[in-house]
Length: 95
Image (tube, rainbow, N blue to C red):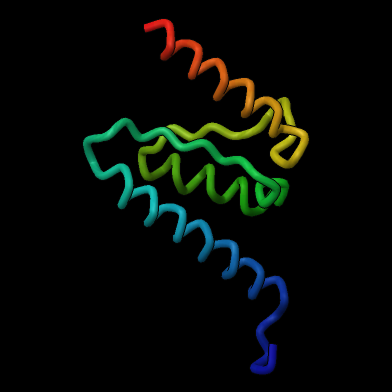
């Protein structure tokens, strides 16, 4: 802002940098041959610009992206995650 950059431009650069970091981490973790599925969750994904930018860039990079559409990404969605984790453990115990 000291050099005259608008808040909107600074915010856009900040969000784009976060998404670039997500993409670099995903590429490092998954590589080229792995199943490339990403789940976006947590309070930061209440931010529409961050969520939409992440979905678009990750999808464009070949990831299958999942995000909250029916349950909230913040604390309200924690119980759903706990249910999924418990179901996975039960399924594994039966095998």
